Image 1 (cartoon, each protein chain N blue to C red):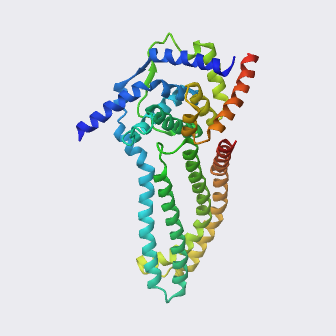
Image 2 (image 1 turned 135 degrees about the vertical axis):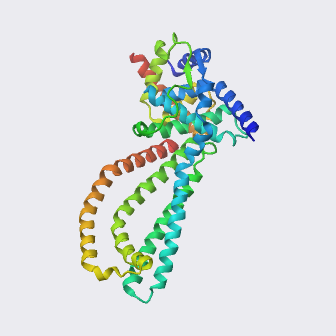
Image 3 (image 1 turned 180 degrees about the vertical axis):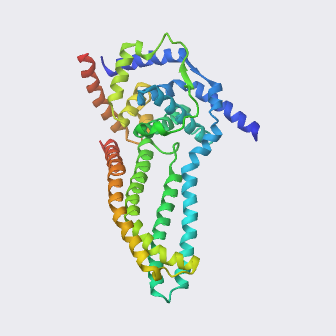
Length: 204
Length: 169
């Protein structure tokens, strides 16, 4: 049987569907479509919230770093944590930008799937950076934050600080490597493979 | 405001009613599992509702539905395994077969066709569905975002595979 003959079979099937399909209007109304709209906005709202919080944190760290600029032991961690927070802020802004660009109506299938998967790939890769940078962030964040908020010099209790850091790093890194390998590597591979499929589909 | 919303909803329901075949076929092609199919159906309806106010009549309503439904189905299909954790708002299918004497499984050729579609990748699935539903190459190209020549090449390739498959059975 040729594909054109199957078109006839498909047309007959479509006719049968027209006779037999039933739209349950009550159920459709029950779906609470307006609420679903809010539900679908959740990832975007979450990212906007992250941008606002990260922005406030960046400003606070920036001001605090400037306040203790004369003391290198606070200035350097302050600078490092401010830069890392800025990186996080830029990433969140990019995520918001990608999410607002996703338009199911005005984009063709290839275009939309590509933009979804490029954004997904970037998010997965950025998550990896986040995992690896996290200990450095804690190390640099703690002194300036504790000093700015509680006016306590964390270095006075250096034994506790250093022991805490070593324990955190020893436990954290193997876990982060394991978690990324098991949770994200496969996702990243699937996303990259699908992007390659889309490129091939577009060009062939 | 509520009145406008009600009119919008009524209009939306009527559009869905007129195009329920299309949504049904897309769901059947992308989801073999009935529970997942129900979820996909709901997700497509939600996406359609979310974009409904933006529909300005520049393209045919069916083109608009194809575009949104296929995009949703492809995204859903790729995340199928994660679906178990998602909250389903309603338990039953919004679009269902009223006459249980007829099911796609009863038509051998349609069943074979669905089996063939099931084995295609997400993008080829979209292409063949658009072709079987008698869309013009230009419309298929616009919906998918590829050239008309590309559509023709791919369809001729699928035709060859399908011919072999059907002659073997």
